[in-house]
Image: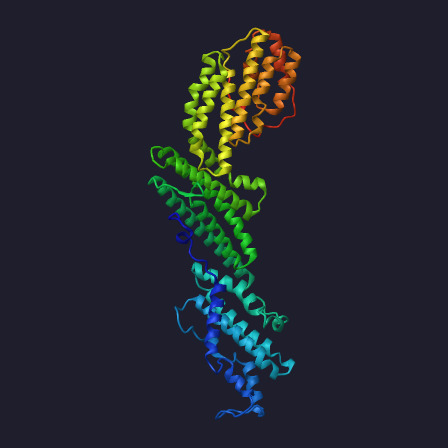
Length: 533
C-alpha cells in the first residue's frame, strides 16, 4: 500500500443517511428499556381508558376533545422540536438529526395512536405534518442566512433533497398518509441551486487537492528510489487506485444527495481527471530524465506503465462515455506509456544499432547470419519486460517488431547496394523473404499482435525480384494501399537496388503513386518513421 492510500487521502464520506439511521436505532433501543413513551404521551394519555392520574381528565370528558383540538391548532404536541440534542457539539448536522428523527417519530405516533381517535375530516396527520414542515423549513431558512462551511452545505442538501423526502415523508408508515398533503420542498428551488453550485465547487477543489497530494507522494517515492510493490508478478503502484477512489467517492457523495447532482458532478470530474493526468504525465517525464541512475528506475517505469491499465479499465467501466471522448481523456496516459516504452527499449535499440549496420557493411553477403545475431540480442533482453501487465508486454513486443522491420527497411534504402542482374536481385529477394519470415515468427511467438507488419518486407522483396515494370507497378499500387505513408522517396530508394532498370522505367513506376488509391491517413506509422535521402 502506498503512502497515498485512499484512507490517508480521502476523508470519510459524510453520509447523513447513515448517521440518521444510526441515531434511529439508538433511540429505538432506549425506548425498549422504558415502560412509558415520551413525546406524545402527555396527549395520548387523555384518550386512554382505565384509572386516570391525579388531575387527568378521562376520555369521556368533553374537555379532553377540546384539549386535543387545541394541540392540533397550536404548536406540535411535543416541544422536542425546539430542544437541543442531549449530547454532542451544537452543529447543524446534529440539529438536523434531532429534528428529523423527532418529526418522523411523532408523525408515526400520530398515525398509529392519534388519528384513530378523530374523524377523518379533522385531517389530524396533515395538520401535524404541515406544522412540523413549517417548523423545519423555518430552521433551515435561518441556517441558510449564514455563511455555511463545506460540511454544513453538504448536510443541508442531503436533508432537503434526500433524507427528508425519502426517509421521512416517504417512509413506509407515512407515505400513504402524506401522499396528498403536498408539503413541497424545505427550501425554495433557487436556494437549492445555489447550495448545489457551492457543493460542486467545493468538491472540485477537494478532488483537485487530494489528487495533487497523491501525485506528490508518488513522485516523492520515485525520487527516493522506493521500489514498487509486486502484485501477481507485475510491478504495481497504488496511485491509480487512489485516484480512482477519490473520483468515485466524490461522485458517490453527490449521488447521496440526488442522482441528478451525481450527473452534474460527473461533468466536473471529466474536467478534473484529464487535468490531473496531464500533470501526472509531466511529472513522469521529469522522472524519466532525472532518475536514470536510480536502482529502481526501470521497475518504477514499469509500475507507472501498468497504472495506465487501471485508469483505462475504470474509465471504460464507470464513465460510459463515447470512444472518441474516452480517447481524448486518456490521451496523457498514451504519452506516458509511449515515453515509458521508449525508456525501456533504449538499451535494446543501442545494442541493435551496430548489428543492423552489418547488412550494408557486408553488402548483404550473409544476411541470415546477421539477423540471427539480432534475434538473439532481442531474445536475451525480453525477460527485462516480464513485470509489465500482459497487454502492455504485447504492445511493447509490437514496438520491438516495428523497430526490427523499420531498421531492416532503412538498411535496404541506403542506396549502397546496386544489383545489375536479375539473378542477383532474385537472390536478394530470397534472403529478404527468409529474414521476413524469421522476424514475423519470432515476434508473433513472443506476443506481438502486429499482423499489419506482415506484408512490409515480403512485398519489397517481390518488387526487387520482378523484372516487368507493369508487374512492379501492380505491386507498388497494392503496397501503397497497405502503407499509405509509402512515398516516392521510399520507392526510389528500393528501385535504386535494381541496377538494370532504366531512368524512364523507374519514373514510370514512381508515377503510380500519383494515382489516388482512396487510402486514408495511416492509423499506424511505418514509412513516416523512415527518412530517405
